[in-house]
Length: 140
Image (tube, rainbow, N blue to C red; front, side, top):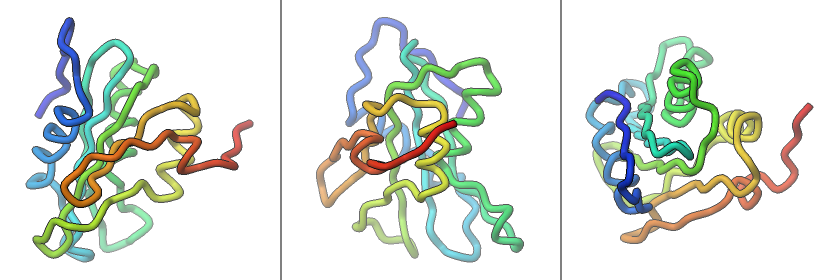
């Protein structure tokens, strides 16, 4: 799945979440059995994608959120509007997948406090801001 430009098309939270779900089969999670997909929307209406990739050396594991953000940065985009995050644990849907502390700190580096973070809670998509999930975040 390559990055996509949605010029003139409104990207709703639901559409962004559906795009994130398309990344779940690409996730590589042989250790945790937790597959995560993320779809990152730029203010220019371009969408970048990421999935988690685990490694036997756990510190080398890459979260879906950071994969999407780093891909966007490598392509020259740094103005982010929202990210949708979804996952499956042991093949089952059900629990929400929130960004880890490391991913939140990366978001703090590149996003405004009102950056939208969309997660599935039950059958609903719920939107938080970066400030909601990282109220005391720091930057240099």
